[in-house]
Amino acid sequence: MSANPVLAAVTGRRGVALLFLLPAALVLTLIYLGPMLFALRASFTAWLLTSPGSENIFIGVENYTDVMSSPEFWSAVHVTVIYALMSICCGLTLGTIFALMLDSDFYAQSFFRSIMIIPMVITPSVIGIFWKLLYEEDSGVFNAVLTALHLPKVSWLNLDMALPSIILMDVWQTTPFFMLVILAGLQAMDRNAVEAARVDGASGVQLFRYITLPHLVPYMLIATSFRAIAAMGDFDKIWLLTGGGPGDRTTTITIFAYKIGFSAFDIGRTTAVAWIFVVVVLVASSPLLWRLFKTAMRDQ
Amino acid sequence: MVDGTSNRSIHRMAMTLLWVAIALIYLFPYTWMVLTAFRNPIDTLAMRLVFTPTFDGFRTIFVESNFQKYLVNSLLTSIPATIAVVCLAAPAAYSLAHLNRKSSVFLAAVLLARMVPGIAILIPIYLAAAKAGVLDRRLTLVVVYCAFNLPFAVWLLRGFFREIPTELREAAIIDGCSELQAFVRVILPLVTGGLVATSVFVFIGAWNEFLFALALTQSDAATAPLAVIGFRNEYGVQWGAIGAAAVMISTPVVLFAVVMQKYLVRGLTMGAVKG
Image: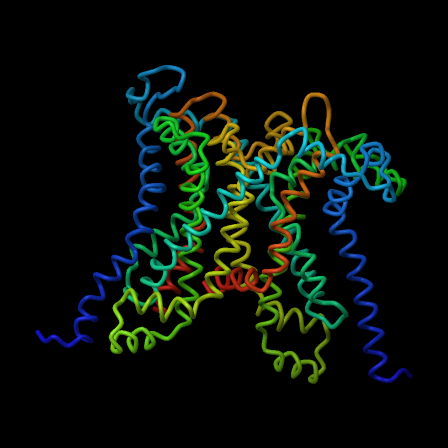
C-alpha cells in the first residue's frame, strides 16, 4: 500500500460513489419502494377504511381475482388503451407534420416554434376545466363555430362523443411534444444525403419516404413510448372534463383506482388495481426500458 | 420566369402566412381562455371577439376568493421541490456517470421508478400521511413532488454529466481536490445548462401537478390548480373568474417555457432521444 493520492482516490472511488448515490437512493426507497411494498401487503387484505381492524384480515389473492373478473376493470383497460392509442396516433401524425413544416424556410420561425409549444406546458387541470366550457353544448364556443359554419351542433360530452372528446383534448396538448422531439430529429439529419438524393432526381415524396422517415423512426419510437407511459397514467384533464363519465365511458385505470380508493375507501381492492396497473405499465414499457438500460450500460 | 431569389421569397411569404393560419386555429382554445379572463361574461356567452376589457374576473379571484393564497402555496411547494430534486439528483447522476459507472442496480431502479404511475404510490402515501397527521401540509407535497421527479432528474442529469470528460475529475483529484471539491468546484459549474434544464422540467411538473395535491391537501396547503375547481360551482360557471384563474396559473409556466425554450428542447432530446 502506498500513500499515493491517485491510488487512494481510485480505491476510495467505490465508497464515494455510494455516498453520492445515498441521499437519492434513500428518498426513492422511502417514497417509492416503501409505499409500493406497503400497497402489496394491503392488496392481500380485506382492508376497508370504514371498518377498523380489517387491515389485518388476509384474503389471499381475492382482491386480484375480484378485480380481474369485474367488467368495470376491463372497461377501464379498454378506455385506457383506446385513449392512449388514438391520442398517440393523432399526436404523432400532427406533430410530424408541424415539425416538417417548421423545418422549412419562412419568416419568424423561432417565434412560431415558441408559441406552438404553449399547449404542452399549460396546467392539465386548467385544460380539463376550460375545455369543459369549450365543449358546452349550448354555451360552448366549439358549437358556436360549427353553427357559424352551418354545421350541426355536436353533443361533445354525451355517451358516444365523450371518449373522442378527451382524445381530442389530449391531442391538442401533446402534439407539441411530438413536434419538438421530431424537430430535434430533423435538425440532427445529414443534409448532404438529402441534397445528393435531390440532385439524383428524387421527388419530395421519395425523399420523405426513403430518407427522412427512416431517419425519424427512432425519434418517433422514443416519443411514442414516453407518451404511452404518460398517457396510461393521465388523470387531471379527464377527471375534470368528464369525471370518468358519462357512466364509465371515460373511466381510465387511474380514475378507476382513484374512485375505489377515495370514494369506496376499499384499500384492498384499490391497491390490487394499482399493482395490476404497475405490472401492465412495466410490461408495456419493457422494450423501452430494456433499450434505455442497454444503451446506458454500453456507453458507460 | 421569376428569378430564384424572388421565387424563394414568395415561397417564404406563403409559408409564413400558412403558419399564421395554423397558429391562429391551433392556439384558439388558449386565446379563448385568455380572452375570457378579460371579458364580461355577457360578452363571453355572446362569443364576442371585440369587447371592452374588464378586470372583474381578477377582482373576483383575488378580492372575493383569496386566490393569492393558493398561488403562494403553489410557489412554496414547486420551488423547494425543484431545489431539493436538483440537490439530490446531481450527486447521484454524477456518481452514475463518473464514479461508479457500472452501478446497474441503481440505474435500473431509477428507470423502473420513472415508469411507475402516480396512482400506484398515491394511496399508500395518503394513508401514511393521514396516520402521521401531515395531510394538508405544504412540506408533505414538497417531499412527494421531490421523490416523484427524482428518477427523471437523475436520468436527465446523468446524460449531461456524461458529456464532461472523466479526465477533468482525475486532474482535479491529482491537483489535490477531494472528491467533493472536484464535484462542486470543477464538474458542477460545467453542467449548469443541465441543471437549468432539469429545474425547468421539475418546476413545470410540480406547478402543474394535480392528483397528489387533490388527495393530500384540503385547504391550508391546496395549490392553485385545485382552487380553479371552486369557480365552477353550483350557482353556475363563473366565466370571468375561471378565465382569470386559468390565466394566473398558466401564464407563469407558459412564459417560463418560452423563455427557457432552449433548455426545454435540450432536456427533451437529452432525456428522450439520446437515452
